[in-house]
Length: 397
Image (cartoon, rainbow, N blue to C red):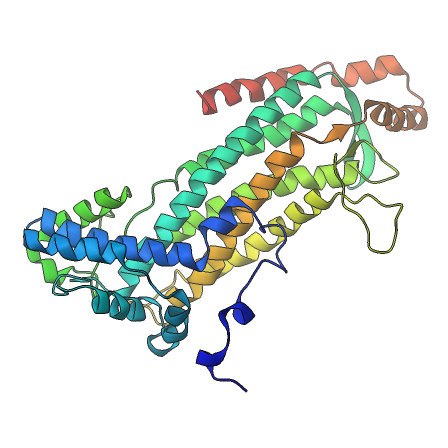
């Protein structure tokens, strides 16, 4: 068996083979190992600049910040070395110190958790901003869909069975209201906090200048300064996991409806470019809906890992913090991919009004009713649709 150092990086690489939902999406590109390392390097450089800005370090230390920014980090070597100290920041600092002439102020007063937490918040900010943009596009598409189909009758289903008449616009307005909910939650996570508590959260290396250094550090990175160390106060992580889950489940609800509507016997919707089958040439599978549904099913379980990690002991946790990293990265990818794919799917999905009419006629016949009864059942839905469209204007004002 080859040693760790002899294993080629490509042999250990994750190219997205088992997670096609996130393959080639913006979120995937924003969360790769190189992106995380770049964010860690950015945090180390910003720390030196913050120390100079607050006069904790002399102006000459700015040269070290420039060298940090320019350093090419061997990501694979970092990953291999991370097993010794339990996190990738320790070998990162070693690589940076080998490249920086004046190392006195590099990583000064920080701990590994500060740099990695800050880096993950930088990466998460990029992804949540992209999610917000994709949700905005999705909401715009849905608002048009609602308006154009507000009076198109269809049969509503409860517990998988035909229930009563509704309209396509009413169903889609529920999708739109869900997107509004997701946008509101995601917007709370588009400016996340930096972490700079030092060894035990007291910023003891900076003395009374601690708050000023943290404020400067946050401003230089375009992030929020925490009121105090959150090494074991993991509210930001729980809030982020919740936002990612809400965004993903909102899309999961949309595709759950589309999957039922696209069943052969129902035939009310279909993806413009469906997926093929390896063994049944007659099938056109709703592949994009299936991928989004897969993401929605994974997010809650991953969020539970992050939530359980919040019960962290004393000033720095053993294992709880470490357990967050990969679930968070996966959540960022899944949630970002779900929103991106749903936004692209909804704009191109084809709705079959004739099939909706045919299915509704079955209900009318079963109940022995007539078209006038259908009208009486759906004539009031406009008031609810108008409320959702009014909310749409408020959310995106």
